[in-house]
Length: 210
Image 1 (cartoon, rainbow, N blue to C red):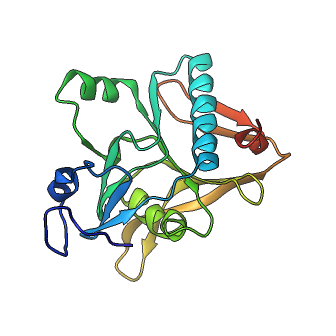
Image 2 (image 1 turned 60 degrees about the horizontal axis):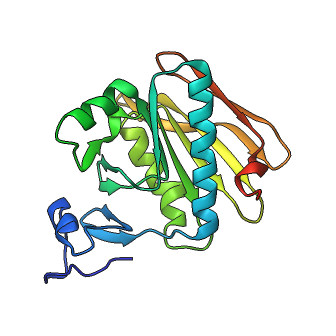
C-alpha cells in the first residue's frame, strides 16, 4: 500500500522523504520508492517482545557480546530501500559504534546476525514478510531470518543463509533455506553464531501465553 508524502508529490520517494514526514516515517517502510504501511497490533507486539526477551536472556547466559532490539526502533537499509524488522541482533561492538558515533537513523543490513519478522495475518505486510523481505535480507548476507506466526497458533520458521549457483553463469547467489519449523508444543533450539555462539531454546507457545 502506497501512501502520500506530507509535503506534496505522488512519489516515488526517498529516505529523505520518509524522514521529512511529520511523523518521521513511524510505521512505514520504503520499498522501491514507495511508502508502505506496517501492520502491527497488540498480539503481534506481544509476540516480538517475548521473543526479544528470550534471545537476550540466552545471549546473556552464554556471555555472548550481542545487542538485540525490537519493534522498529532501527531502520535497516536493503536493496529496495528501508525495512523495520520486529527483532534484530548485531554484535555488541557494532551497536557500540552506533551509539558512540552519530547514531545513524538507517543502518546497513549486512551488520546483522539475525532478523525476525512477526507476521500479521491477512495484512498488507504479510506477503512482504514471507516472500519479498527474505530476498532482500539474503542479499545483505544476514545469516538467519525467522518468520513468526501467532495465529491460528504460534509457529516459528528458522531460515539460514545458503549459497548456490544460479543459471549457466556460475554466479553465486545467496538465498535462505528452511532449517527448522516448530509449532506450539514443540521445543525449538536455534544456535546463533556470535563471538560466543549461543542457543535460544523455547516452545513457540510462550510467544502468545499470558
